[in-house]
Length: 118
Image 1 (cartoon, one colour):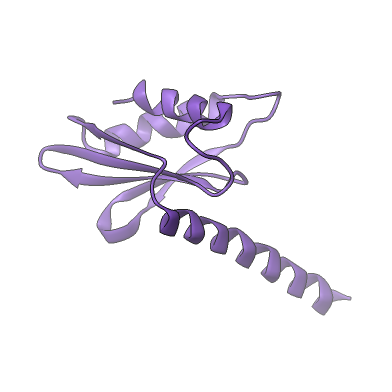
Image 2 (tube, rainbow, N blue to C red):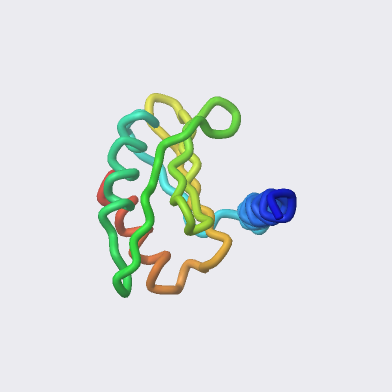
């Protein structure tokens, strides 16, 4: 039973990772730029996303090391992330979601949260 439970956990985690990889291959839903440093933007987006609620659902957002030396703010359980890279003296941001597109209410809420941090 333990082996079965462990195997199911690995499969579930692999599914989450593959979903985000698919979202990245599909391309960013939205892109932004900011005069702020990646650290300052990430420090604003993570608590902003964590505080957002849609139909009584919230997901904690955390800052993690990103790709190519940047940062990533990732929603725990929502299969979405924003990559934040240094761009000149500011930042370039790309928002990805495996479960949404740019026109739905959830993504618009997230996008508005990002805009408030730029």
